[in-house]
Image 1 (cartoon, rainbow, N blue to C red):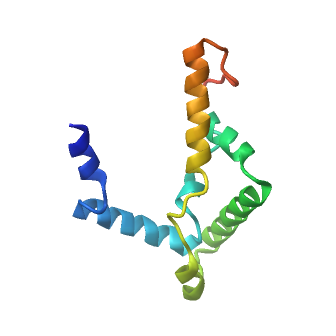
Image 2 (image 1 turned 30 degrees about the horizontal axis):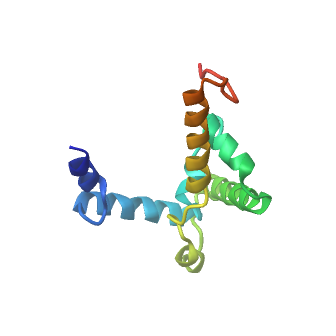
Length: 122
């Protein structure tokens, strides 16, 4: 069952997944964003922790991309075509650190230690 589900969402095997990925890529290129920029650190504390562990330059670049995207959205404009061609929307910078944070959290829970952070979202 798991392999069927993986093949269903894999863009290399499923035409619909490939079209969806292409549409998302186009939208992200219009604003100069990466897919990892869409993660909200206020919603998931693991993402906030992962962003805190990343080097300052990467976090600053993320913030600049988000500011530029908000500015373009408010102006109802897109990036120029030459800048859109240079964008890499699916080059990840957060996934490895996020996986590390989630493994550490699972290890703490397995050992019975208190979590590093506790918060409920209303």
